[in-house]
Image 1 (tube, one colour):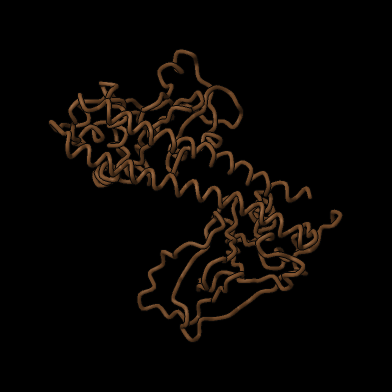
Image 2: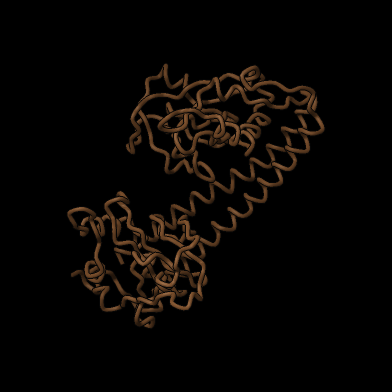
Length: 375
């Protein structure tokens, strides 16, 4: 055992409190992102009395790891009490004067812990990370005041991230409201997207984490609240191909297959050298003056609903350019676009600036968690 590392089992104990009196109806699950999330189980007519209670300040984890890839579902409850399936193990820190529960959750958040849990899992049908294996985990346990300082620093960063996200949500809502009002007052005609735009399939190549070539934007990268370019991989590409697939400000990329079919993102101004992958379709207006208007149209909830309603495919939904092109949109008066574009750019610049700060804060946060093992 490393110096100052302690056995986790000396600090935690299992808890098995059942919902016998049906006092709690809030049913949650635990995700591989290590969060408590609303359960998708249909509980109509279900007897909830045998479900386990998780109290505020307690943990829960799912011991089966074989279906989670490299992740283990484990989370700390920092909200009101809930109930979870009896298949989960609930536990708590026994002596909070020696081990801070939130510090422990930071330790669980490390990718190294996921790998350790997966390595220690075993079983013939389902591989399980058992309670006794969790108890044998070794971790650094510094003075409680140092633990709390680490948690406080971490929370300062996560609170800043949450604030920036909230600001962006408000800006997005205001921008959408302005877009809707502008469309209502300036529409001169309607038409199908295919008649006013050019569409292109993305580049086929295998992504790599090695910094070889430009960034390689994929469906995974656009199916988030924003594109975190730090997490986008790279791809080797010939010079002549690079020119064909390079992304520019105002381009819109749309997922054309899978569960996220129809998801779209408009590319911002401050982006790294990047190209887009084959399961994305890039859409550009024939007239560049309309790029922001088209961008807001294609990234709208109405466009997403149209694509997901009409996407075909037996195994998984598919949306090719002919389908995307059938979307009917309003076309505004071109003379009014200058003022519209100026206002939209103002919104987008602030939103993109906040996203860049969020990405940097995420980097710092992840580094803090990684460094826990080196303390």
